[in-house]
Image (cartoon, rainbow, N blue to C red; front, side, top):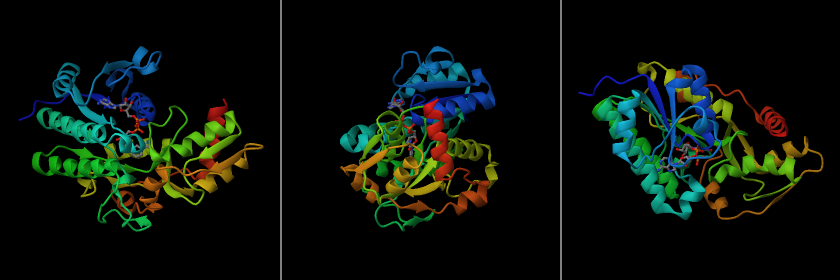
Length: 317
Ligand SMILES: NC(=O)c1ccc[n+]([C@@H]2O[C@H](COP(=O)([O-])OP(=O)(O)OC[C@H]3O[C@@H](n4cnc5c(N)ncnc54)[C@H](O)[C@@H]3O)[C@@H](O)[C@H]2O)c1
């Protein structure tokens, strides 16, 4: 039988794009000392490293994670450490090792210590055979290594729930747009880079075509979705627990550039697709999130104009 878990929250991969916002939100909700940020790297002068509870921890080191959980009284893990799509396709072996191996470390630690686990999935689980508006349940045949690791993560999360009763939950995040931290090497990074380029250079060379439409979401919605899913009563969480579809905003790269040029005088954008176009083309345009709406009341708040206004406002100030 697992020991009684503590109240502390451990966040892996905390210095990345999502962790930067999620740690802040968790500390605001549960208290500054309740949240231990961790990452394989340290960033000098980063507030998590300098001010809050921070520990250097690789998700490939099960003994070190055991020690942190025991010594710090951890009860819940938000497992964000991963290698994202664009970086992962350049180094598939590392992508598999970190994404699959790291998730095994977290799930095994959770099984031994009775922890709750939040482990995100991605729209990259879908392949070219998925409908344009991808439903919750559809064959998952991703063409990228990253996508395959995310399908494996969903399957493992479900298995640990069914076999060992580990309370695992996850969201298939769309491409996330945020201003606090740079994106970490994903295919949807253009939707963040374009804002920085618009304000700093007045021009952006976009690495996907103007007609490329992908599911996207503003970070505030993604953080709220994460907290709401983890707050949902256990009996409301069904078969989608490994990765709920959540819909935010679906826009083309051209529509995004147009929206920014209406707000930044003289902004221009050229479209110069590279290898990442292939990954983007293998993913759906949007997702059907009716299961998340029904089971835990999910509802996005940001549309394209509200997101663009807030990004430009935050980045300018
Ligand atoms: N950002 C997005 O648009 C997006 C979309 C879909 C899914 N996701 C998923 O959300 C999660 C977090 O994504 P993100 O955008 O914050 O990624 P990110 O690349 O910005 O951050 C990941 C962090 O993990 C750390 N890391 C890498 N290897 C590690 C290891 N061995 N041990 C500990 N830490 C390690 C990195 O140093 C980095 O700080 C990932 O599972 C990702 O697949 C993100």
